[in-house]
Image (cartoon, rainbow over all chains, first blue to last red; front, side, top):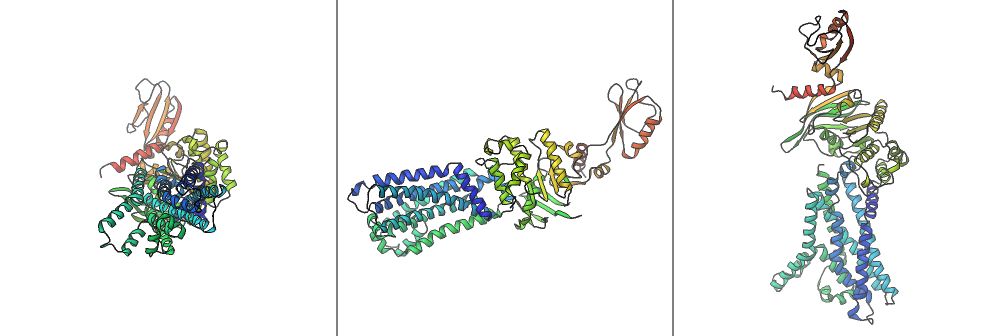
Length: 275
Length: 306
């Protein structure tokens, strides 16, 4: 009950501050432009327009959704403490984990709304413009939206952990940007560099799988680009999809863990903090 | 007496700084207690300890049967808290804010919203809190603290930023609540305001409780002189009435007024002398030591090398 009251207030605030509007518009604009411009290479004959959109859109999601999620979450605890609103809230009959979970649900609802509506618009526009879309593609697209929200949840949880640990808002913002850069850009480049250097001598397939699981954005990428046969063909990952032993269930489990573990540690750190 | 809040040997250390040291007191039902002390004397720390916002380094606290340090919070439904320089989420309106807090306390929203009218925010209730002035935020802070007839009220500097009229109504409400059994602990710098209202005063200095009791009790402890002011006709400048015992320190204030510092035990005797002498006594004022003086006295006493 308390969790829902806090979640509701968080959503209310996000609507007021135009977070919802801004993120929905941003995602919709990018999804729409990808849907129409991004399909240019395959021409209008390309039957699987939606599958192509999934490939380009999920690559974009990897950059954008973590950024939006960290933007709304890095401030959640330390910001409220600095503004002094946390002091009053915690004097009410509500446990700290309830505050955190309420905020999480609220922020997740905002992300889910923006992603579903923004991406959904692009799919709807494709259908409206006469592209043939079969049920397989729709399922893959829905799965892409779902996993994008899950990726958002992972980064909201990571943002909370940062927010619960650091002393001030500036540090929270800095650490969040650093984490974003590392997980979205640097990790993959370093991994690529390692594989190129190693030439397959020491790094086994299992080790590679493990390293991919250690980065939620890679898990998301594998989930979307290899999870569906048609999509993986377009993504040029068909080969990888056959060689990787990571099942969809395992990838989903990895993402869920990536969400639950930081959230749990954030709750722990928050419960020990003094105001 | 039913203790609502019990502090036993509470110490709170921040690194090397001792924000509270070995503090003990109980607050009974319906008591109105003033917590006074300099900035940094430990007033806010004590309130935060009672709310479980911070944990004591040692000692134990019980508030409405809960141990706040262990994260128990059921009793917080019956606590109203107004933090020093209260702040709210700027994006929400006054009404939305009040509704949110009423829901968290499981109190009827309609009654909570009536409090907005009571603190004079009725007209501004639909505006965002971000547009409020400091005084208006303070009023909203009061309104949320009063939600649902709290059994314990912790008010940190409640009257700063309030205009005199609202101050008056505020104290009336607090006193009415105290009469109905609410325990009120309030900290303030405006000592004169508290003088007639607080039934009990706790003086803090550098984290240590230096005095605790009713104002009369503190006066007895402090043994500060009562000032007697006499207006005597026909007294030459600089002249002291002849009937005054030589031991009583006195001074001339202006034309006709003589001020005598009377030790508690000599007060009645001096008054008797003044009226019996049949001198041209025109007027007489008795000024007992006020809270400001008592406060200064207890601070001096603890600061003095022992």
